[in-house]
Image (cartoon, rainbow, N blue to C red; front, side, top):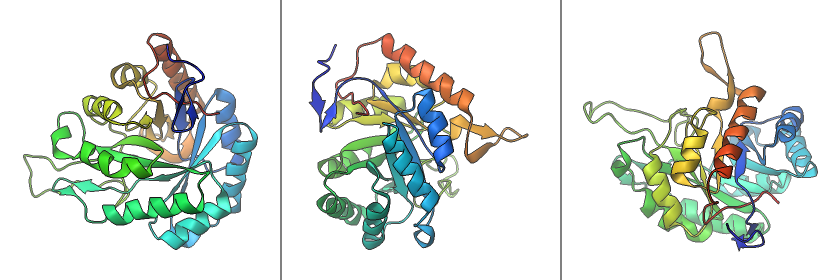
Length: 279
């Protein structure tokens, strides 16, 4: 077992992180923190609506309750990001641009890396999380996951895996866009866990496993990948009458079951080499 006093990138090595995304109100943050969620993730949907007093209150409440806030801005303008970070003061700023397509690494990666460098220079106390794309199972070779990790690791505190949808090889002309254009996430589909495991071994920073993580598969994901934590969004949402996930509305029972699955899996195996705590 790891020394509980050890640290990785400033994080105390204690227990596996549970992170839940698309929490936009203090009341929902409170209910999930009471269930045992460590990181409360929120999203700013556009540059034009970046200032949201309720969301700011959510971030402040999360801190006061002893958990950590993680904030995704769905825009990549440096000045806008800096004013956003200054306004909200989250514990973690999370970047999740696509970075890659089936043709390889995108040209904007240098600019995105520079943005992270500038954010860290302005706000050294705020940790930076970067989503690293991984293709669905069986297609991991299509996405240069480890190459992207090598590019961003020097300017990142935490990686988060997420699923990059890739074209059907039998339909080369068909497009398969992400749910939010230009960004990865909220696909509801798992990524290739073997590649996620390789990413954990490859990196010197903590890796959180995301991409279709649900109460039913989280224990298997933890056992196979041995990440520093897990993240869930789509699979812990309330669903409508047709079984479709409703964004920004969590199902507390699903969250409770997911946390139970994490703790059960955690108890059945040694902690991974890059475990982190939320303290």
